[in-house]
Image (tube, rainbow, N blue to C red; front, side, top):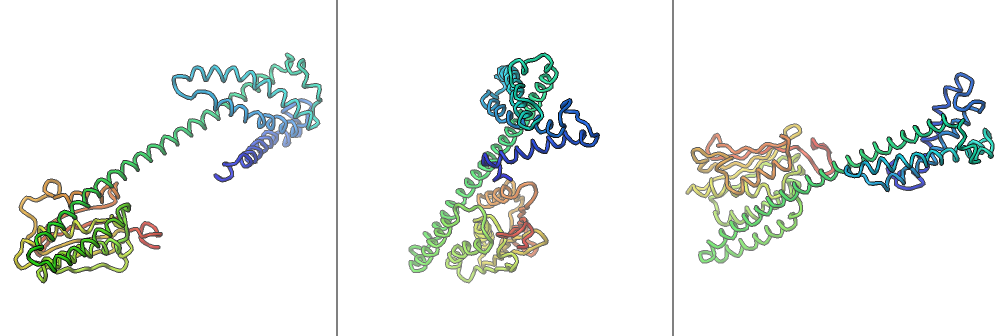
Length: 370
């Protein structure tokens, strides 16, 4: 239907169908009763077609005239005055078109087009009715134009909201990129003099990390499998740094592999677990990343068995940049209570971050069923 209304041929066909159906509708009472009510002495069906087809021919000119008038609130008086004057012109024009239509359909004569016939006092009642029909058409046009403006304003507002959200998400993402880069460089610099060979390996992994970051810089969301690939070089750097003291466990269910998650989400969480949980223990510890499907949601959990959260720690007042930005991105991408982000002490010691997201997969529906 949208494709049909985009061409003048399509619009003409739809208009012809509309005015024809209107003609049939108004002719139905006459057909049922068996006598004409539209024109005395004329065939009611042909009279109805002549009546409404004539308005169908006049309406495009009314519409074209209307679109040339100002539509702002300050100029509404000029608009009404112009439409009022135009009502006289279009009513007279309709009389001529209708007389020609009646003559063409065999229910009138061509001499009805004469000036004296058109402006005869006996036609005053018909002219008044035609004038009222003109205003009904104008009213329908105004209603449609207001509806168009409403839709346009809604679309514009939606675009502005989407642009604002995208700008905010990009700003949050830009905060994360230099944050993890600075921390990675800081880690590497601490090993330059101590172990140049290990440092070169770290730099190689850092290069891989930066390449993957650039590949996803314009994507706010990626499949979890892609996010895990991005996490791998960072974990390789940390494994070189801590050696056997750092253990990484991955518990990713197959159903969760293709689930859509915010890009660059896991790295800050794992980094936070290593820096604030594991690095403060002489014996090191384990960081576990898990993901599983729970009905129509995806649960992602990052936990460590490190030193745990400090006394009085709260996510609202004590979280660092990585946790704060990640939480804000999750909330922005999934508003209206569609997601949750919690940081709490782990039962067996350490801390855990628990995230719930709507389960979505590329090309699938919202519950993850492709």
